[in-house]
Amino acid sequence: MQQSDFESISRVSVPELDSILGKPFPILDDGFVRLVDYMGSDESIVQAARVSYGKGTKKVNEDRGLIRYLMRHRHSTPFEMCELKLHVRVPMDTWRQWIRHRMANVNEYSTRYSVAIDSAQTTLPGEWRVQSVGNKQGSDGFLESSKGDHLTKRETEFQKFANDIYNERLEMGVAREQARKDLPLATYTEAYWKIDLHNLLHFLALRMDDHAQLEIRLFAKTIGEQIVKKWVPHTWEAFVDYRLSALHLTKYDTEIIAALNGSGKEGARKKAIELGMLDDQGTTAKKSREREELEYKLSQLGFAIPW
Image 1: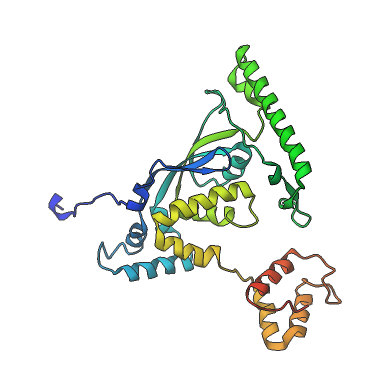
Image 2 (image 1 turned 180 degrees about the horizontal axis):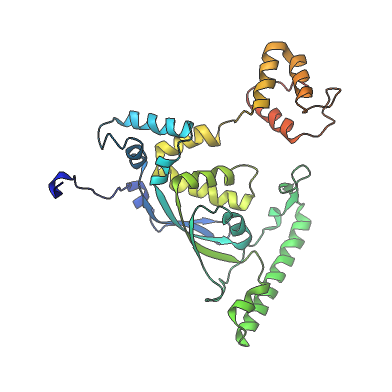
């Protein structure tokens, strides 16, 4: 083939993203997310899915329909054609949860080479959350203001004490890699984080969920609503429709809903006993996380709980 046989290619540009390149979106008291670079767009996803068609052969509404089909049927490869690179500042305890998502390229600020960032997340008196009774890893509600005032005062004292000790070690010549060992997890770190769209959407689905910790949820919500939504609007629309705002029904769920539809409450209760979601008497004395999740789905679908 000759050079003339190839069409010219220009870099995909999304004006809505170009306008926010480098702009920090503040999160918490001193955190941020900012877009550093991106590759691809909704058009790139369509191009990858229709590789045999080439560019410009389909209408916009057909492109949207294809993206929705890909999302609905979990065809992930076309979404991997798009990538995003972010610069983030995040508390270390929140970063521990973030970095568990391994399908990304990461380069983090190193406190072995550099002095630790002189900033730690602080908590206002009304922001101290109470441990959830039903969710061992979550919170539910807030402490009264008098306790919050006390805890915020103690937090300020502790963070200053820890920072003073850290700086004292540095001034006495202690190596940075050792001087840092008693810094609190509230200390901010920074990182460059590059990830493809498929894995980014998986991250957002988990971290925008109501069950995720509030702090990482705020970062995920900012990434989703301030960056991804502008970058790939058709994909974002499909993601919200088929992932964020959708309900997933298990085999047990469908069997009980079918029993409810066919035989009423008694049929649903009988099926729930058979599947182990209720005890032998058909009561909820037996704890079942799966039953509780089904009850939530039933309420979302407008059904009365049948037991």
